[in-house]
Each structure stands twice: as C-alpha cells, then as structure tokens.
Amino acid sequence: MERFNEILLDVWREACRHVAIGESTCTITRMLLAHLPLAQVCVRRLDQMKCGLETVAVGLSDPGHLLVGGRTECTAAQLETLLRWCREGEVKRFQAGDGPDGAAAGILPAGMQRDLLAGPLTHEAEPAGVLIFVAQDGLRFEDRHAGMMKALVEPFSAALENDHRLREMTALREAAEADKQSLLRRLGRRELGDVIVGAGTGLQSVMERVELVSRSDVPVLILGETGSGKELIARAIHSRSARATGPVIRVNCGAIPPELIDSQLFGHEKGAFTGAVETRKGWFERADRGTLFLDEIGELPLAAQVRLLRILQDGWLERIGGQQPISVDVRIVAASHRDLASMVAEGRFREDLWYRIAVFPIFLPPLRDRRQDIPRLARHFAERAAVRFGLPVLMPTEEDNALLCAYAWPGNVRELGTVLDRAAILGNGRCLEVAKALGVMRPALEPCAGVAPGAGAPNSAHPFGPLDEAMRGHIETALAQTRGRIEGPHGAALLLGINPHTLRARMRKLGIVWKDFRTAQ
Image (tube, rainbow, N blue to C red; front, side):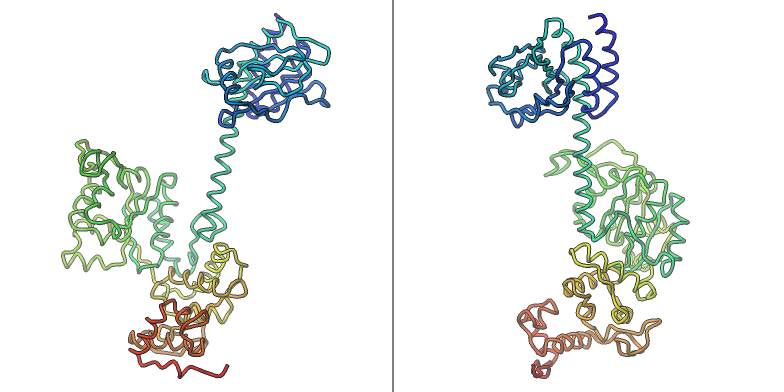
C-alpha cells in the first residue's frame, strides 16, 4: 500500500493534465497494472435525465477484450438505488456471477463473469458517474484493492468533471457556430463583419474622416439620406475606436413611443410605474464602455432632448423612480436624414443639444452622387442574395449595370440591395432579372458617368418628372411586358406587387387602356 501511495500523486497529475478523460484513463491504467490485477478500467457518466450510465473512457490491459462499454439502461427504481449508493460513497465489490440486483443493476452489463470493483464519482457531493475496475480472467480483487480504488475515486471524479466541462464547451461552441451560420444566411453573407463597398472611391472622403475621428472620443453626427448607410459608418467608427471590445447599441429614436422614451433610454426601477414589474437598464447603461448609436435623433421630443443633454454634459443619469445617480461611460454617435440646423432655427431641435452632438459632423453622400460604386455594390448584393436564397452566384451584366447606373436611387443603397434581391428571386437561379426588378422606371432614370445616353435609359436633362408621369410609365412598362394582362401569375399586378383591383383603379385614373398593350401571342 505504501508503494501505491507513492504513485497516487502521479495519478492526480495525469488526471488533471488532460481535459479529455480518455487519454488520462489509458495512462493511469498502465500505472495501476503493477498494483491491481486489471483487465479494464472504465469511467461511466451518470445520465439522470435518460436513466442510465454511458461509458466515456476505457483503459485496457489487453486491447482485444472490451468488457464494459456503450450504455446501460436502468429503471427509475434502479436509478434511485444507484444515486443513493453514490451519495454514500461506498466502494462495492462484485464477484463473478453476481446477479444484477440493487446497485449492480445500474452498474453491471448483463452477463458479466469477472470480478469487479465499483466506486462512485461525484461532483460537489452530487452523483456524477461510476468508476469500474474489471479483474483479469481467473483473478480476484482483494480488500486492499478496494482501499486503493477508494483513493482513486477523487482524481477520477476531477477528470470526469473536466471532461464534462469540455463537452459543454464543445456543445456551446457548436451551437454558437450554428447560430452564426444561420445569421450569415439570413444576412446573405459568408463572413461576419461590415463590408464598406466604395471605401476607396465614392466614400473615400467619408472614410478619411472616420479614421480621423475614431481615435478620439468626441460625439459624431452622421448626416445623410435614408438608406445611405449611416449605421454602417457608425459601426465603422466603433470598430476602429478604443471601445471596439465594448458594446455598440443602435436606438431608432423615431420608433420609440413618446411615453416610453425615458424608460428605454435611461431605464426604470421596479414599481416606478404601472407595469414596471422589474428593474430595467436603459440603453445608456447597456452601452456602458461602448458606443450608443442614436439613429434619427431629430425625432426625439424636446423633453427627451433636455434629459439627453444632461447625460452628455455630466455623464450621469437616474432611472425612472430611482434616487441614486448612475455614472455611464458612453460614446455618442448620432445620425439623421433631416436638416437639423433648420430644425434648430425653427425651434424644433434644441440648439444646445445641436452644438453638443455636432462636434464632428460626417456628411454621407447619396448613391446618385457616387455612381462609380454602383457596379461593385451590385456585385456585392448579388452575391448576398445568392447566399440568402440558396441560389447560384450570378453577377450583373454590363446591360444590367447600365440600367442600375441610370436609375436615380431615391432609396439609396438600401433600395439597391432590395432591387438585387428581387432580381435574384425573379431570375430563379437562371439569371438576374434586373430590368424586371427595377421596373425600368423611365422618369427616374438618368444618364450615368461612363454610360452612353440611350444605353437602357432615355437622355433627360432632369431625372425627375411629375409623380403621375412616373406612375404611368411604370404601369405601361409592366403592361407591355405582360401583353396587357393584369391578373394571374403572368400579370402586371404581380409584377408590380399590388392588388389587381388597385392597379385597375390607378389605370382608370391615369387613362391607361389595357387593350392598347394586347398583342398577338
């Protein structure tokens, strides 16, 4: 026994050296052969949810004979007996031919004809598994061998716990990877991370200002039309700043009901008002040590602007119903498509808040002012659509790019992405139906740099016309493509995405006669 105590430290070292229990069990088995008549050492994990024991590690003296493996099922009563035995911490000895009664029913596989020793493995005094020693054929375990096993239960319990944590981390990693891939499919991307197309061309001056301001912590105000990519620029500022490891939280100020603005931004205490059943952190607290992106800040009511100004000045807030000030360390990036300077002059936006947030303004150009980026953006969105919808990757043709460049893009980059999604769906893996997706809106088309007049669009000195003219041209184009058909799977209503009755009403209003577009099949 004294010689055995000498190797116990080595057993502990080996049990804790490997995170996975399989390798350490094999090594420990070889260590124990000089002290016990072992044919096999088996570690079995207790599965209380499924009522059974599952073998997770095996060490063999004779690699050709696996005696205990796989999974052993047990009844609820047998499981209860097994749990009680584990909690008692008693090492049990089973002789060859013992029937599967009591705790043995949950430990021994059917038909075992060898001597066995079984010791309970626990974690924080709760049953975790069973350690089994199987004797060599014709040999028997003695009382001193049971004492040795009792000393070995603790290191094997630690090894089983390490293995359990490894399995949990592996499962969490696999779940996170599955969530990542699902998110990428929904976003139509192959990798995470924001892609800024045109950073070296149409957005070069913008990205220069982003690089300049990212190194500081001053508030930034991004001004640009709807759909021009203000959130993308805000995230670029955050990712290049010293706060990149902190949270970046976007708040659409125009989407918060006025009565909930204070609660959403600053949080509330439990019982502060009817329905406040628990304490809630506001967006400022959640963005602590990170960046808070206040999108459409011009939509904030004047009362909320006052409270926002106080936080920006002092760095302190109070939750609704709270009495203790809370310090927050947040960088503000605000954005708006409105002319905030005019709103200040009209009294609809606080002048002091304007000066506070407009320390470093960044003007984001609309897509029509950086048409050189349209072909690259189109390729980017075409690839995204293919990933999102599970279609072959198809790139826009030169004719498609000519149509895209000639369009005025009132919805900016967001509209371009929508058009490419629609084109991919309409093409159904065969091609990109850019013309159909765009609808060839003639009044909204204009010449593009590098595109000859007439290449997919009429040459016009002004890109816009009356709304009725734009609608008439759009409907007439759809009717021409459907040969005057209004309803059905090949009708103009489906192509335009509106109800057939609505389309007929608009046609009557605009004086469009469907028969004028009926041609011979």
